[in-house]
Length: 322
Image (cartoon, rainbow, N blue to C red; front, side, top):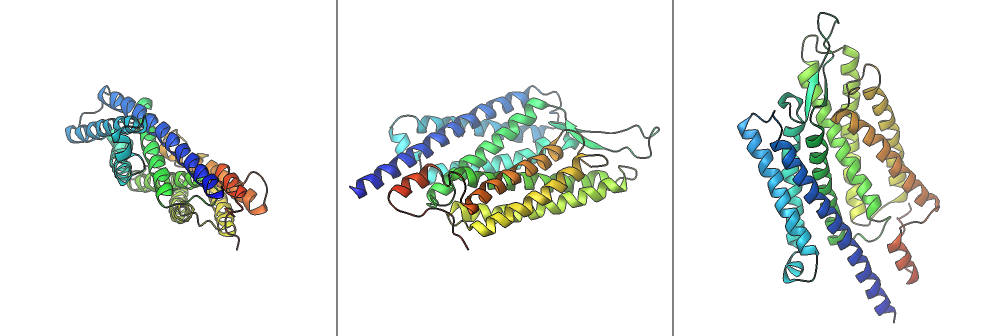
């Protein structure tokens, strides 16, 4: 009886994960379609090589995500060959790689595709105060939507394959992956601002470059910490004390980061990647800290559905306490 109950619980959990991946694959298909249309209708895509690369990336993402949706629907031979197998993992990894290569080109303000540089008239101010801002909202948001969906699909697949059913669940792990993504963007945008604006004579004020340097340091710390925690979380090897401390440190760092970067004299006062990534790091770090603090203190619902299922069989799925 216990074996049958355990098998049923595992089957139900697997079905739930497959449905969530199907929804994410469908969103990826939608965002890929919209980003392809947005790019092809943009009058700024003049550079032939970059235009071909972005078009190819969006088209491949659309094709692979559409096929993945088909594989997840029904019980065909394609489903047995794809869903939950190494093939699905390879496709997800390929799409993450494609968008990781396309997004820096799309978001580079010097290309004028999704973002562009704006500044003050040098005749009216001591410095131009250049900053990147969104110039094509459709391409900007749909490209990021595609990249995030590809990363979420990969995170779901990795956690399932590694058997990380313990800990606080997939939602908690995904937050660390998203914090890692936000940190990567902060690092890239801070480095880009340093090389393209701070290096110019009169490009911006010295205090702005100093704040940008703090953002770069915060992004690097966030990237390292979130990568390590998300890896152990995917393996189901969470440590309540370590993740609580890490969540608190990231919340403090990103509170200062968002304040210094997006308020007066900051390098990200205009709406763009730098602005969104700083605030994303702020909100995600507090969401992570709140979740892990409740688990550490034994407050709230714990690990969700998987915890409840395992609790019936007397298994301990809470994070390791040290």
